[in-house]
Amino acid sequence: MRTGLIKHSQYTELLRSVPSFHSLPEDVLSKLTDVLEETHYSDGDYIIRQGATGDTFFIISEGQVRVSQNNAASDEQATVKTLFKGDWFGEQALKGEDVRTASVTAVGDVTCVVIDRESFKQLTGGLDDANNKQYDSEEVKAKLQAEADFFSS
Ligand code: PCG
Image (tube, rainbow, N blue to C red):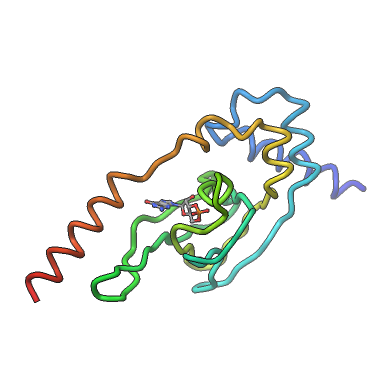
């Protein structure tokens, strides 16, 4: 019970530290804390696989993760970026189609909190930030690079 309460307040703190969640009312944060799950990963573990279906939203509570995308030209995984504690990911598959648009792997030990699609939508109304998030610039850059690599080889 005691541990439960401590965890509850730690998670509420974590959710509050995420800028996109900052403006959510206290009772919504508290309800989100009630429904989230904690998951653990070791170095190299896949948290998300590009192309798989998925309906969960993640927030990093400890550690860091690598986001990578498959380079169609060379069929290699190219690192897009690294995300850290307090960063979130997995929102793309919650919009419309439920296909994961990138892979996410653990760098060292990682703990995430996971919220499923229904709770996420019900409690946050989807969050404008997550709904509107686009990665065009990185994706366009990666595509151009892939094309350049292809034509120079
Ligand atoms: P989703 O559900 O497609 O799963 C992979 C996640 O990686 C994606 O949601 C985003 O949350 C996250 N991500 C972080 N950076 C990028 C990026 O530059 N491009 C894409 N497609 N996803 C990214």
